[in-house]
Amino acid sequence: MMTNHGYAAARLAAPRIWTHFSQHLDAARERGRVVEALLPDPRDIEVVIDAAFWASLRREEGYVPKISLAVLPPERTENPLRFERPLPLTPPSLAKVAPAVERAGIHLGVWHEGGELCVWGTLRAIPTFAFVLEVAAPGLLVVKHHRGDEWGKFVNVAVLEGDSVKVVDARASNLPDCPPLLSSLLGFDSPGSWTGADGSVNVLVQLAVSMRAHGRGGLLLVVPRGSDAWRESIVQPVLYRLNPPFAELADLMRQESQDVRQHQHWQEALAKVIDTIGGVTAVDGATVMTDDFELLAFGAKIARRRGAPPVERLTVTEPIEGGTADVVHPMALGGTRHLSAAQFVQDQRDTTAFVASQDGRFTVFAWSPCEEMVHAHRVETLLL
Image: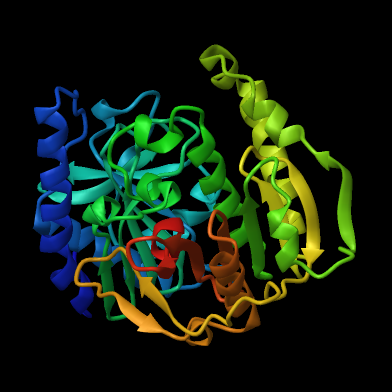
């Protein structure tokens, strides 16, 4: 049921989101994939977004509602928790039931009952490509779908914040010099686009999410294994240099057996070490890790390599529909952390820098041979 207020962005976003889902569902079927999810029509998408938006602005006993809505009938999931009487899809109902589904992995199920959309219960198992809407913060909604990997992050489709609507452009992964991390975050194919051949992309995505989660800002430098060239761009001595390097993450990733990696114990161990490394990125300075995931140092200070020119411009893009590539000074992206990351990548062109801002922005810096300059990829829309 629509509210009397009417969230204008819901009306604008619904047809675009429906088209986005429809195209990728058709492409998946053409590749022979079995698609169990049902795509709600644009009107249903609008109704769900409208109800969730106004629910996000309410307070229930002083708490901000944190909910995730999965639009599918109970027959399309496993072991659903069903209400005897479905709840109306209204902001007050959503706010009241929110405490039951605050924990990660629990969703409110939404589907038609008596001719109207309603909340029929809760669920954990989400079919691949099912429409999911998450209330990330007051007035901030994220439309996403499951990629089919139990432990993987959902794929973000659109972000709505106030009157701003950003629909993810999956075609950005086809651009020259697109970093593997960005390709994975954009990927609709599963599990290949998520894990990569050795799971490396999965780890980088999880590290990015962990860095963003602590909210203090952080800088992670990924450098080539077996090379010391990166030290030319770091002030010596490094206060928190590790000896020997912290290799727990590397050791986990060397376990190539898929049977081992699917085991809950391995997944839990991976999550703990990801948060360990993500945590040290909150310390002032840069965290340095090799591309085979050995942690070398943190709290490092970046300096321009001797004889190298200062970075004065870079290309910045965001993978959203209608987005453009702009050439700007690094300081236009943020403060000294962004400038240092851009300088490091310009000086050390076989490296990648991940920068999390305190305000939630996240940027991946990589050298672009095609553009002959540093390319800054804004990816916070994909990490929510």
